[in-house]
Length: 259
Image 1: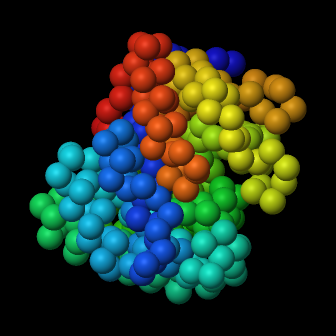
Image 2: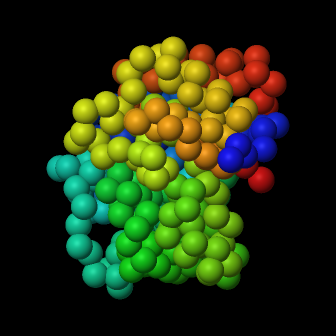
Image 3: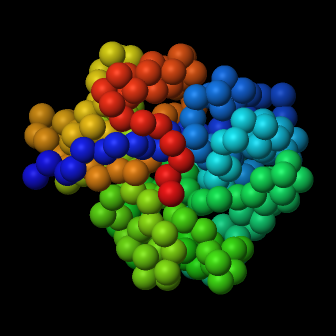
C-alpha cells in the first residue's frame, strides 16, 4: 500500500556529536539546511560547551531544537544496548532534556521535541518497558504540556507516546537500510548504512513523495514519515543534506518543521 504523497516534510539531523576537543558533526553547515536539530545531551556525545553553541546557532537560524537522549555510553557512542532499570532510565532521560533546556532557553529558544539515539532508539522499537521509561522521562522533564517524540513508524515508543497524550512523530532515514518489516538493518550488518549520495538522495525523495522505501530484499515498504533524518556523522553530510533538500524541492515536496 502506498501512503499519500507528502506536500512537506521536516529535515532533522543529529548535531553536537563531539566532546571536548573532539568534533564529529559539521553543526554550522548542517544548521543552514535542516529544520530540526537533534542535539546530543552528553550521554553518547556532547558536552556543556557544545550544547550551548549548537543551541545558539540553531536559535539564530530558526531551527527547532530537539533533545537527543541516549543510554549513558560515551565510550560506545550510545550504540550499545543496555539493560537500564526503568526508573533509572526515566530519570536519565529527564536529566538530559533538562540540561539541554537550560542552553536552549539561554539562546532564546526551547527544547521542542525528544528523539532517542542509537541503541535506545532501536530498543524502544520493540521493548515496551524501555519505551514507557523514555516517555515517562519526557513527561517528568516537560510536565503536563509534554513534548513531541520522534521515533520509527509502528514502534512501541510512538505507541507509548500516544498513550501518554504526547505527539508521536514518525520519521524515516534516507541513509539506512530497512528490513522488510520496516525496521532498520542493524549497523553491524553489511549494507546497513548507505554511502552512495545518489542512492541516498533518490531514497529521500521517494520516501517523502511516495511514502515508500526499498527494503534490503528489494520489497517496497511503506513509510509514513513526517520527518526525515540526515545523519550528521556521515562523511560529506552537509553537502548531502543540501542535495537532499534541493531534490525534495524539485520533486514538489516542501521542507519545514513538523507541526
